[in-house]
Structures are given as C-alpha cells and as structure tokens.
Length: 198
Image (cartoon, rainbow, N blue to C red; front, side):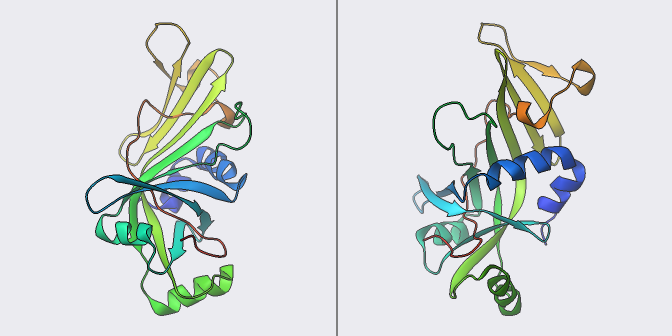
C-alpha cells in the first residue's frame, strides 16, 4: 500500500489522528476537490471510510471525479462544516495523492465489507498534509502534519500579531484546539462506506 497512508500517520501521531478521524465521523458526507482536464478545480461530495490502515475514497463507475483522479491523483478533502457557525470541534483538511485499487479480489472484498454495489472506483490516499483548525478562547489554533515535518502547532490571535508556533511545553493543546497552518492546497477525492458517490 502507500508509504504515507493513514496507518503511517496514525503511528506517527496517534492522538492527532484520533481527533481527525472523529471529526470526519460526525457526518457521512464531506467535500472533495479534484483537478479537471483543463486544470480548473472540481468540487464534489463524498463519503469517507477509514479501515485497514487506509483512508478510502470511493465513487461510482465513470464519475467525473474518478476520471480526474486517474488523470491527476492530487486531491484535497474537507470535513462537512455541519450546522450553524460555531464548529465546536473545528474543521479538518487533508491533502494527498489518490492511488486506485484495481485488483478484482481486493475490490470484491471491500464491496463485501461495506455493502458497496458494483461497479465502482476505489482509491486509497497517500497523505501529504493533514490540518485541523480550531478555536481556543480568542485564538485560532492550527495543527498541521506532514510526513517530512511531522506535527506543528500555530496559534494566532485576532490582532495584528503574527502567528506563533507552540510546543507541548507551552501548554496543553488538545484535539479540539488543533489546527493547520495558513494553507494546505491540493485538490480532493471521494470515500465510500456503502454506496460510492457519483
């Protein structure tokens, strides 16, 4: 499977990975960004499935987002913001490259486990960045992880002061205070527990 898959992320930062997974689990549908043939972005809804150490993105056979990923595997995934404006658990963004699973026995096994109807496309994610943004008091707390840099936490107030990087010694930064630096930018892919998205 992928080098920087969900299992590698979870092994490197288990607490952060749990918070990210819990945030995705709050809603069934999330937002995926992919790149069209002309390079412009495409945004679509999808389900996200984490199982067997992989972040899975599934979609209906022949869907435009699947074609996008087959042509250019870069994606970005954003959690469903939910109702209201508060987002008490923050929001999460994941960037990476989608790797298509084409082995028929493996596709059949996944379909059996998730009751996914054939035919469908299934991709697993090679992660390049995971970001969680939350609010702690008057500060925005951005936690981001990359395979090369590891986990980083930035805090930024609502004044003109620049964001400051904090470490564990600076004080507790629980999952709800997690975040991401100023920009992760990569388009997204779909995931599927159950029926893949179009």
